Length: 317
Image (tube, rainbow, N blue to C red; front, side, top):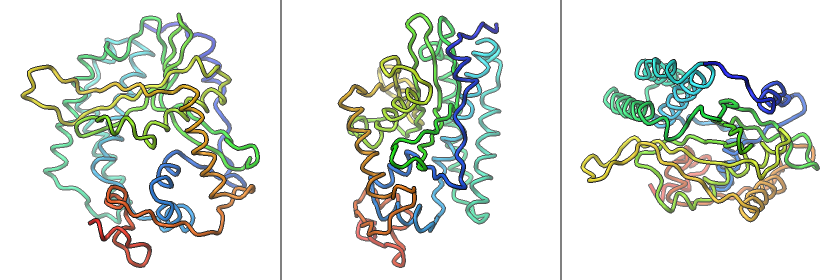
């Protein structure tokens, strides 16, 4: 049943940040920082030179559809009831979201297919398994008892550097929850993965710094003490070891270290990016942005085989 929403949540919902005014402001995102950390040359081609290339894949289509269905489920669960959420036909809703997102990316790819019917069927069936698991085990991850949904896709629009006020860090937080009794917020970020995150992925600062920065700017955007904010990754796995003697969850929980040391390191990484790449007026600096050839980075770079633009990745492909 609908419940009385705590005042602190109403204040957040009623006071979204001002939208970016592109007539004089420029937005930056964590994906930009992540690309720059991997290879400055790729960042230059994509964001400075505007040499955009199609980068979607069946993995991104799948991830977008999974996000949409889980977020809709939680909206219904907290606005109405868990029973109402359980009545949603998750497989049907996922199929619709999956197909619609594929069509959208297909158009962006000059009406050219980037997946096969067999691959799409496999990903669809994986998605249904994940959602069935989520529905059956939802109480492990989300409860209505003393807990409220602040929102899904909660916006952040904030200038991280006072010397560069026209540069706005923008983000949409997947899920934000509030536990009333302990007065704590939790920011959840959903990640899709083939088999889950191993130790090296959990230690990858380029992955975990995303949530750490979200924590910092959520605190500043909505005037919430940073010590009252927790962060957690929910990693949904397409594949699990079916013959395992122990039950393997489809959803892996990971709470990264997010204390002062980690926060300062993540902040410094963003500040260095802003200093190296942008003038105080927000314009991108005219300078050399060297390629950083690496097997992992080049394998997934759309410019790695293009001799005219880069071609540095050919040695790894």
